[in-house]
Length: 280
Image 1 (cartoon, one colour):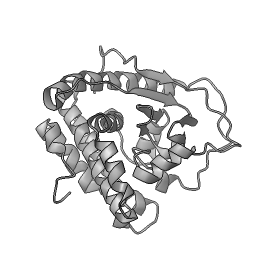
Image 2 (tube, helix red, strand yellow):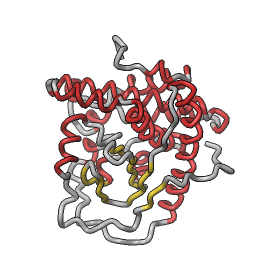
Image 3 (cartoon, rainbow, N blue to C red):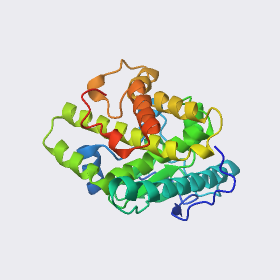
């Protein structure tokens, strides 16, 4: 991705180096647990199936960010700036409303949010309670090494996906899904969350379509590959499980890549209506 000359976003809250040794748990607060159980949009990319047993508690100490983490932070700020530019135009043009960008919190190891505690194992997430996205800068390495999603545009897709959850919050979609889940069974609630996540993938594609001038050869395939690598079916299989569709909360590899492609090909928010789609 050609980011030279792109000025980094100012909507960054840098908490790196503030990680605490968690002999005390980085646990969920009451409201955070409620949000997690009620709607499941706490973790934008759930890598728990791959990282179970890799408890990082007690391993986090305050330290200076590494060179790799500083590079990831600079990259994140620049990608975030592109999302602000894109949605600053797309939201008024296609949704008839001004865009209020989220703050993106960079952290190392563990942090806290109104949606509860988080660690690198939770993956990036968006918290609607404070309208902030959260990203452990080490996740990019996990994305490449553990999940097989290599390339800078794969990492950019992850950032765009969390911003897409913010778009959903701005449009009222998160609240609607929350209310629907309250009256749904577990399986029905999971199915709603899958549609929520696939819509975020589609909105990520809308962003990717709008930044086409910044793409380099192979970038689009990096994003599509990332979408496939973090499908529920693939993550469960890589963790040694037989994939259980009724437990899926993010969609299959094929579904995630397909909806990203729909957003990319159309460049339109309206085409991202996963809730109205008969088939995913």
